[in-house]
Image (cartoon, rainbow over all chains, first blue to last red; front, side, top):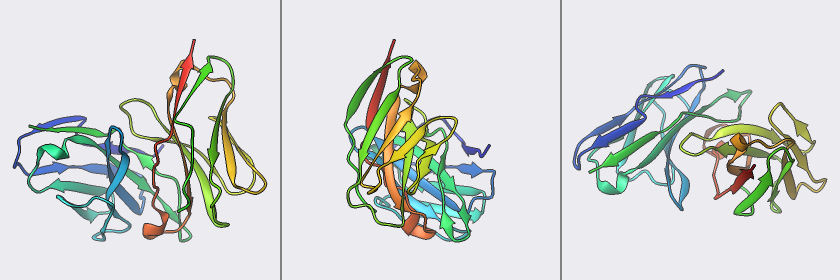
Length: 115
Length: 113
C-alpha cells in the first residue's frame, strides 16, 4: 500500500512563527500536492509539484511556499504564520503512468492552530 | 475540468445499498469520473474511477450512464463505518496541472442503524 505520511497530526504555533509541514510518500510518485480544508470551503489546492525542484501555485498560494528537494518529500512552509492559516492541511501524491496522472493517495492530515 | 452536482446529504439504513448520484452533464470525452470519500478528521480516500464502462472493486460499484452525463456510486451493503462525505470528481488523466483534482462539496452520507 502507498503511504503518505505527514509529520504531525496536531500542531500549535504562534503568530509570526515560521512553520514547516512535512510530507513523505514511499511509492516513488511524481506528483505531490498540498491542500487545506476549512469548514464550508472544502479542499483547496495550495501548491503542487510534479517533479523534484518543480512547483506550481494552486488556488490559494499566498502566505505559503513549498520545497521539493527529493522525490519522496514535499514540504509546505508558512513563512510567518497568521491566525487565518489555522486549518487542516492535507498532503497527497499520485503517479504518472505513460504520461497520465492517476488517483491520489492522501495523508491523514495535520491540524494546525495558530494562536 | 467539468463541474459535478451532488446532493448535499443522504441517509441509508445499515445493511442496505447506498446509491450516491452525481451529475456531470458537461463532461468531456477524455474525462474520467473519480469517487473519493472522507471520513471525519481523516484524509480523503480513493474509492473507484471509470471512463465509460461500469466498474466494480472491493469497495464499491460505479455505474456510468451511456451518455456519461451522470453516474451512481453504489455501496452494496452499507455499514456504520461508511458514514462519510463522498466526492464525485471528473478530470482528464493528464500529467501536470491539467490532472489536478478539484473537490466540490460532496454528499454527506449518514448510515443509520
